[in-house]
Length: 276
Image: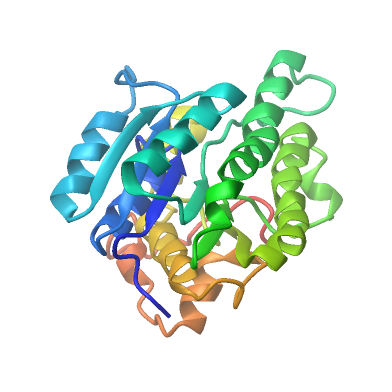
């Protein structure tokens, strides 16, 4: 196990939610964080920008680079990698956290929306990982983490929102693919997914509502799990579809009440999609 002091980690979709929480967790350990997101402007209904998170990262003890990028734009992705390496001297990790969601069936999902989900959920994982590869190969502690689920082929995960499922499982299959291919370069590749719904403003805004928030956990659990993965020596842990709670229990965490969104609640937590 090693810490993240002076390691350089790029986090996509990092202006709020899980990405922001990861940035602050790693920063507290002295990491250099690239806060990457599509918009540099504040969302009308959601808090945070790449610049506000950059300030928080610096305050937490890390170094920050705010970078505006649409992960569908290969040229901009390549520019981000070069800018990161020029600023911090290399790249040690990529967290593919940016995502798009539309819970609609095959009969009704707008093709434009499917294209968006595919481009952000699946294609961008390949684009960002490929673009970072020259620098990851030079790192002695290289990691890629994709925020994607275990491959669960139960038809219940396909019947209502198969198009979304396909794009998230695409990420998970790329985890297997890249883990095997990049092992020779000592680059670890894993997926990370929450056991329960993660209570973020985006979840509330995208239709879950307050009742869903109250049955979820704080994004700190995902940040803590990602920290455990990144702190593991390269390729001691690779090619796995990791569930946050399972990993943290294996690493000795016993207090999971600390992660509850609604403190001192007896409400049952809501299990996340794709988890039995």
